[in-house]
Each structure stands twice: as C-alpha cells, then as structure tokens.
Length: 66
Image (cartoon, rainbow, N blue to C red):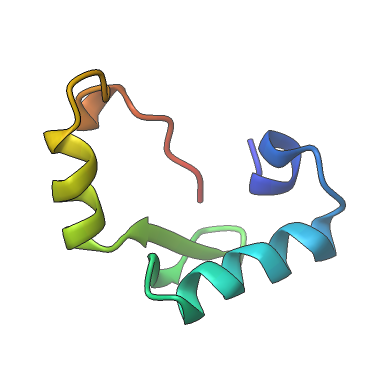
C-alpha cells in the first residue's frame, strides 16, 4: 500500500508531505524500492521517543510503508 493511499491524499500531495517530514528530520530516506519509489524510515531518536510512550505499539507491529 502506498503512502498516498494510507493518507488518503493525491500522490503528489503525499510525496510533498513525506519530503517535508524529511526536511524536518522526522523521516530519513533509505534508498529506492523495487518499483522505483523512495523508501523512508523514522529517525532513530523519533523511534526511541515513540517507544517510550506508554501505549505506543511495538516496532514490529507498526505499519511500514515504502
């Protein structure tokens, strides 16, 4: 499933949203997938902060996109 579908946004709006998150250092780019689309992951400090929250799901249970 693509980010656009998950966010219920047009493809170009979803791409712009992801790029803004990269610019804000909340996401990092991690190469290109088999379809040629960029892959993203959360910044390690953001993952640690989220993991410290009481009701945050374990990393293995998070939905991964890209």
